[in-house]
Length: 330
Image (tube, rainbow, N blue to C red; front, side, top):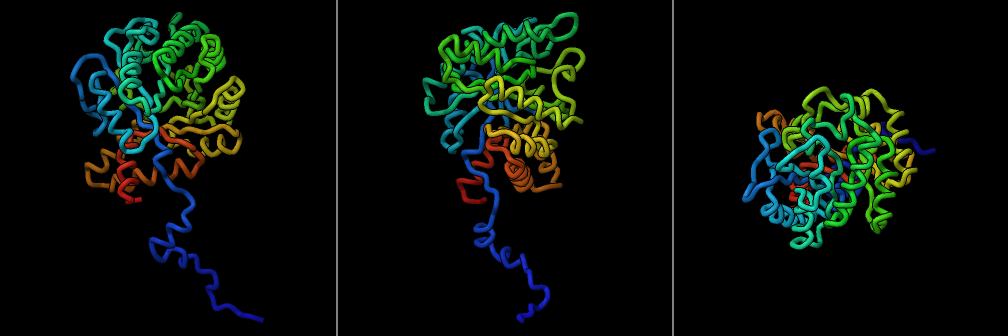
């Protein structure tokens, strides 16, 4: 009989050096995992940094091309566009105008950067005077009236060059309504990435400054999900899958890794996770104070999101992580 000297199991053998650690590493970030958010605003010659999101900018349409070319040249395959219009109204009509901010950006980018994959955020909060995500009726969102406007918005985006639409308002039946509208107008090839499990989170604060989209009264708990609910997230993603979503999303990511994991195990669809503005800004603030190594923390956060089951990640760290990948720092 062979006797082993204790301890006979030594996992540290596979941690001895960087090469062996790379060989046994279970999770890796790649350029193909990344989607970079872009904020487009009205005006000309504008490149303005967002105070609460260091390193993230709002671009006028004439400046957004250079920003997207830089992202493309880093090897990032896709961007998601958020618009800040010149004028707002109570229904967000700029969202379906051919002269709307997103429509102008789409036409410009399709002409100048045709090899970039363009995803559009589909919602109304940036475009309405009240800052809520649809048509208001008696102080509440009229779900079905909002669906009618969503149909107009996605068809307009598709006509102007969107490669994918991403409805984020958490309206009941939004995926079905959007799928039918796109198909009826000859855009059956346009995929839908649904914000399926979008929680009413405190992590959205910096985004609302960036997109000028804070609600003028109340909050969005009447349509976004309760952060306490886990099972309900599976119900939401299942509904969207049955209505025709091509990709489902969990937002935010870091505090909802359990939900990402549940969704990954429950559905065969690709899963997107949104590493949101508050998650980004906390890391940036900690780095500026010298309390953390922000690059290492950002990498660890994104690895945790990927490890939980995300196939793709929308993240404001996209450019920084891409640089690290290209320099073989990770």
